[in-house]
Length: 257
Ligand code: G3P
Ligand code: MG
Image (spheres, helix red, strand yellow):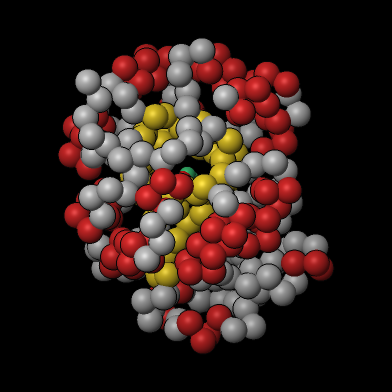
């Protein structure tokens, strides 16, 4: 019998990593819309805190790589992001694309009737602070209990999520799962295991699925490498470029199933 693990209402097969990050700036609302334009209805996005406690959608601890701003997010307040563009290095059409707040992302997901994997990046925040902000935002939107799965490399953040939200779907996230991954997921009542595709094996997949866990891999942009795992119960792929998969009829059919 599968223990009570809250889960999303969709397998989450094809997930656009940081949004459709090959065609739009990563972790932006434009990247979510680009995923929708590709016929995808799942995105993975990273959430982290500004110094004033505002949850924003951003991967790094600093603004430098992805935006026109500089410095650590922990030194910023929400008003400091006015005029900062997240489209650094992208086409001029993205020149004014902002760093979204979590609230703006949730508004967009709701309007598009999307699903999402929201990954907590703790960075410099105190333990549990990011989870508390995510829990507050999700609690205000009942649909998120069916359409959002929260993951993190930081098991302390996931433990806080579970303490605050008994019914929120969670995924344990590791590059390579530790030997006690199953006990950790059971303690969290997490529904899914998210791992780097390089560490996926047939035996791990068989074991995880036999215990009722969903298994998804990141960040896979080489569809052929994953073909053998479909037959062993791979649940989903997190990819920068969904069309690499969807242009192949067998992947399109798998994604629709
Ligand atoms: O959630 C999967 C993946 O996004 C984890 O790695 O560094 O791209 O956030 P990263
Ligand atoms: Mg991520």
